[in-house]
Length: 71
Figure: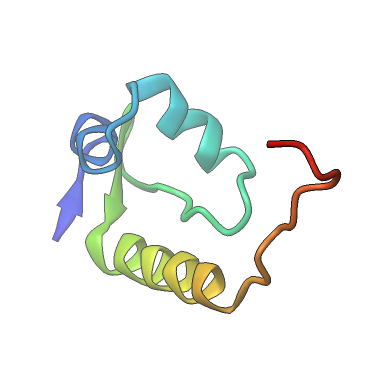
């Protein structure tokens, strides 16, 4: 199954230009597949794998401690 930039944006609750920026180099975000001249789509399986990887990374990340003793 393939998703358009509009569908990917809705899936991630962002604007369409953000999806294009991410595809241009955000840490592991999947590249779109060219279906025809002027038509690109993202594979749902690629997006699922990317999202699973992000969740796994978030679970293993160490918590950030705030500096200082303020309230």
